[in-house]
Image (cartoon, rainbow, N blue to C red; front, side):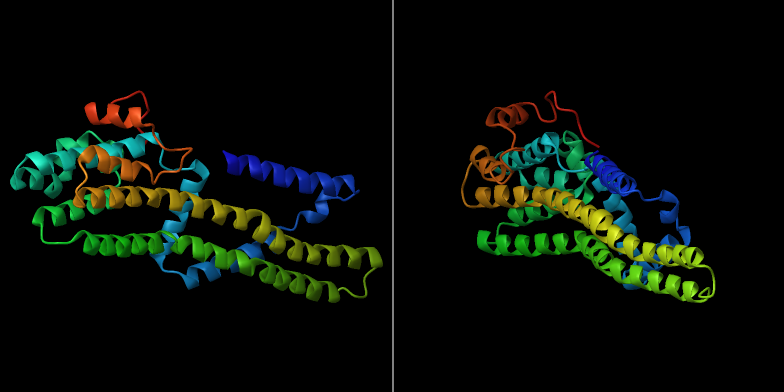
Length: 292
């Protein structure tokens, strides 16, 4: 919603200011200039990136427009799954624990936390490290180093679309100059025309420069910043898992280990202690809506 509001404000102020100065909107209507800039930008983006990154960019843009960041339900589900697994690690046999992590889709623990189960990468992350805890030979500092490495890899992969779009956005002003030069070449072909005709052609050429700068700094730049913020918040779930399981491995009881994970959540998004305790007693319950 913020993106839509921001776009309306941006276009409203720019076009409104232009009209207030006495400008004519028809001069800005240069679809072929836009086709040159957009086509060159998108073509270069496709050349520079793998198809996987191209597809993930479309996904990231959708997440940005929907502001698909973890909500309280996501945090509570993650903490609830971790609590149930840690509790069972203390009270149940290895075979019973393995039945949950080997097939999480059919596990009652994961089924009670649909937002975790829908996140395949996060589910695999939890299961992999619980399996290492069951084996019992790994030291906590070794697990921490391995977790940090994996989280860094996950973050790198998730940010590829951000870096790709940033590169394209940085190139748009230069591409706008290319479109403007092409427009000037066209105008020079009509150098013998009347001044008003030549002036209109030069004005149309300058729209290319305008579009390149405008698209770069007013459209692509804010969008990639939003994508970065959304992806970073999504990756925060991995840090919660990391800190909770490490606290458990270092001797904390499950209730205390959850506090280590809860404290990694931003203060303005962090579920209350009471909400976490309620989740431990009633996994998947509460009044919060389950996000898709």
